[in-house]
Image (tube, rainbow, N blue to C red; front, side):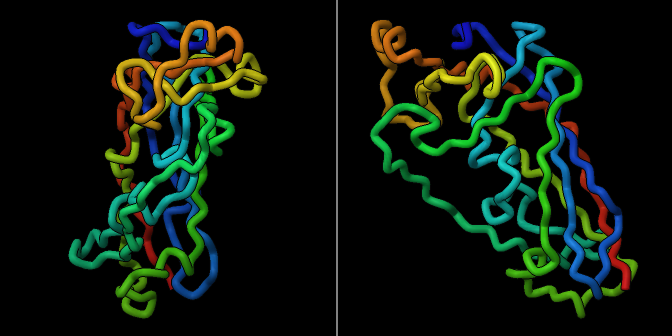
Length: 224
């Protein structure tokens, strides 16, 4: 059964890494940051978990919605910030069907073993400074800037058991979830007949999907 019961729950651990601790102020190299997640507790050990990645740090994009906070903050002077240009997005759903795939949601599977997943963020040099009043020419080589995960963007809005490329293939993942529908609040629970006939998988209780934020700020030292 891929639809979690009301008692099912998962805890994942989140860490943050980068491929390089330096960034050149005179080149066009991108800054690469990696969000890593693995299962550390589950009411069903040995089972993979699939989540919706949208609107969260698991999406691999979203500087503008604050996945890494307001910006990169100078260690030497916290008033100096490379502003990421945060906006307040308004989400709306133009689809009438209750299937996650019909609505264009991105699905991500966290494997049952200890390998976990890695979500890459490639932040171009231009994007890094796109909305910032602090410009590259204002920065002294050697100055360090911290980037950290915004815990408010670590929330998962829908989850179920299984692998999206395995046992969930061909299944209809329904927007409704146990305990409260955070993804599409107006959608009702389908009837048992609908679940059988349309091969629906329902979401687990989002409040029982815990994210243990083990991340620490990563420091990027600016070089000539």
